[in-house]
Length: 173
Image 1: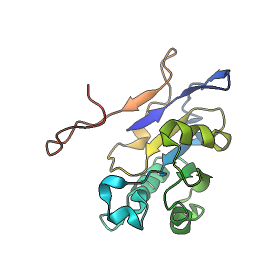
Image 2: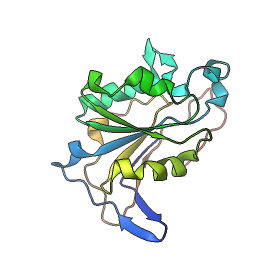
Image 3: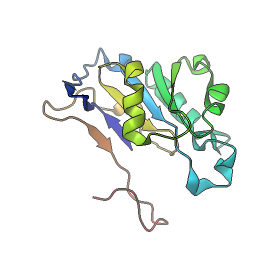
Image 4: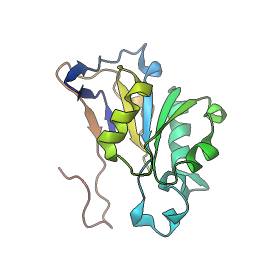
């Protein structure tokens, strides 16, 4: 799932992320969530963070980086948690993909989605940003993401149908 155009109320300070215009789309930063334990993939994740598990010959997160770069995104923030040091060791600065990657280290205990995003806000700034789960396969065309949210919307969430092989999921409609 992906989020665009978040509103935050931090320590009583509210602000609305401004709408994205076509000219600012490629300036939009991206946060890739990569701090979780990956418990459902154990034992694979005992020594490898879930976003670095290879699918189709490359880590899951690399699939995202390639697609984000192809869609024109340039600034990426990745949060780190479980075995987090392995992620910057593998991805580096992002220059291989024409990206600039900054890292937000959550420490030894992951902060969950909201806590991870909140901790990374100094790196993300106050403009609208995209959030991508780094440990999932996603075939969404990142260049097709709306460049503007409707005036009263705070977020945009992309969901995918539950696969037939899975009997329950995290969300349902």
